Image (cartoon, rainbow, N blue to C red):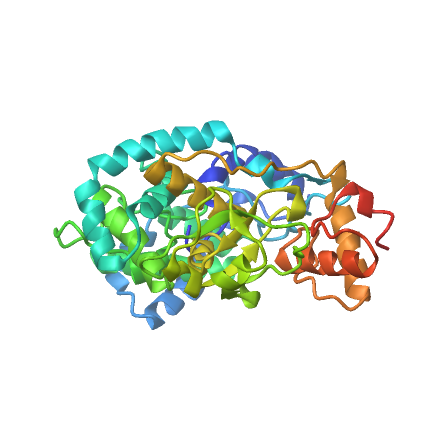
Length: 421
């Protein structure tokens, strides 16, 4: 979801553990729940109201919205006054595996089947959406399916309650306070009443799973009823997703990318959005589409980037700038690939990626972190040193492998643990 706060709909089961985690995090000297609720009411008056008033929220809307709001103690990642944030799972315990686990074939097939049917049902709307925003219908439908099961997912929470709780006592209070004030502007603008403003446990709204700030910027009234209804209106939901992508730079007439075969003599250490070049230049190195088709003359002249999310241990791609627009919805290579693959299934009836996701061996995040630190010590830019191999880590690893006389794989695996120190 745009402005994703906690991982959105797919993390809907997280609150089940929240009470147990809260009890473990709350020290004996912490304030009682009753005392915290009193602090919350004082915070609403002394902190939240002045901040909301400065942005133009009317006092009538504010008082009506916040009257009777209580803290939702079932939410995850709460840090009540007097307690400390729960420590993340130790990287020495967190498992690290191939990205292939992200691409559940059963789930993709289910989404593709339903998505294909709905694409036909809403074909007229999708044509109008593409005419206006330039985003293909299959891309819009794929995001709709991934985010909220095409609007079927239950979104039961009061967004004001969730956002107020997290703005008062979470690990990212400032961000949630901004989103809470944006939610009040939605009510002030008449698109929703407080009771109608339903969201996920992370505060994401409606079928596109927009955070409130994204709703204010990108939500669209496409059915002409004067209200931007991303909860109950399919046309509004589809157009809002397309508008988001268009405003983020979607290039009309281009897809997201192509699965390709990269010859053994072409280094995998050339990936990343900062190393784009004409697709014809990639093709001249021997890179070919797995479909056997050539690149069209228009695409050959346009820019593309190498993407190897699992190095040589998985499928390989040449992606367009639109791939990185998909990442604006959720900043993850795997998310964008999931959307791209699902969209292709919906539009063309295609199947899984042809390349196999390989086994990288028994690994922990701490192993990857150690490799990142070793690469940094050798002068490489690995991006964020966090135990997760982004494209800068992958290509730095490939460069190091080549210089060390090893065949570049551009991905951490168990065989490298003893070699890269």
